[in-house]
Length: 440
Image (cartoon, rainbow, N blue to C red; front, top):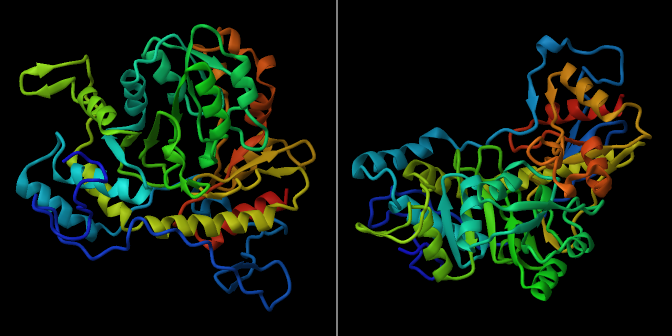
């Protein structure tokens, strides 16, 4: 089975010929995600927040007052938490693996997940990987990228590490202030005779200026590989954002919107490219005795693939819950002096993978002081992305890493704080976060 959408669909619902367990029917993966339901107005006055038509009163340990619950009594609230479906729903998948004794090497669940993801994401071809970093490394190998690649300093370090692993020189350029994605004007200014590709990141799942980037790539005959680790399920201008560029790379790490414990994938434009990627992730093997490339072991196991199939049955609930949480943060924090919220991306169905705020000079505390204040109350926000990649020792010597060349990214790294957002975040926990921020 190729893992493309043209193959006969075999999703998580129903028993496959390969022995996958029977499960309850699921909704079509291709159905559009509805917008969050509008809240009813709360009949009571005061600072109650609204959710799904219910009034929620302030928690008794509101940080606006002098009476706070002791830290030792407060449950830790982390920036994210993996979504885990009911364990009993996973057991039939495990039983199937125990029965057929196929653990890896493109087994039945691996094939089913590739097909199901194509259908859900609206793409033609996808190749599963053991993690997103291996997928990035392999994507560069698949397109035979060399020389210099223009990329962002404002990302997780795996973006640039994948270039170094391939002997490629990263060239950092600045980002746009409203999206924190690569600034197309800066990309064009950084092109040299050694430039062979652009590696943008859809930061926080917000789409890059894909049309401007593609125009630059076409004018200069460059490849475009998107680090789409944050962008699972994001749709832009009516289609999957993953369809742009030569390749898009996903992460299914435990912290992501959709996770397979660990995992990743490359979205491919055609069957020939997918075939090369499949060879590269399996040591370069074509058959039992033929090796065509110096590949690696990047395969996803059957247990990870099975978990991914189960996760797909719950993904719409997880995304809807994230949207509700994001809306409440926006309503509560948009008027707080000194906080800057990133504007919604136009013509985009978002996945709300992160909720960043920028703590500007007009706020009562500095960013790091607010970060520490939250930690004092067992709220573990994160400074994504601080420091910049360009500030780490293996990159800071590059000419493009000079902070003076990256003023927008440097400012964002010094001001950003990502707030807790995940499906299991409770009303009271979110209100606790909001009260701390409003009461500073």
